[in-house]
Length: 137
Image 1: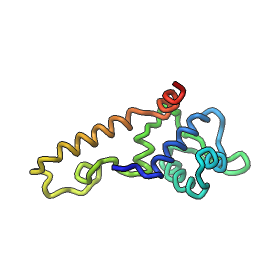
Image 2: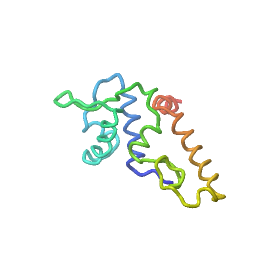
Image 3: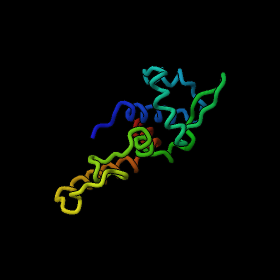
Image 4: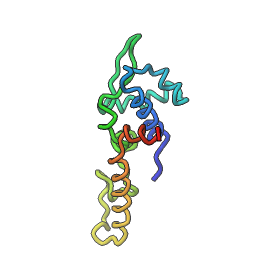
């Protein structure tokens, strides 16, 4: 499984907004510049995060984006699932994946389930606050 640039940049953007959590809404241009991204590409990342309720947005001269929740309440898993979908390594163990005809007799499904569980354990137990705190060390 590979995380796309959309997922990677999404986490980076959310960490930036977490670092600025108490500084009001950050303009799109500022966020794009801080991550060396085009504003057009940034919009493709920010829109799903806003629709999912992880970000708030305000228009106008004081407008921009901010986290909708405290950084300690947003996990990396929240962000990645919004931008990437399932994090399962194969469809048969994905949340809404295809039902495999061989699932009942498959002797390798345990490997895929363990990989999925390990990934979920990491991303669901790591918050934006954790990333900021680890960055400071």
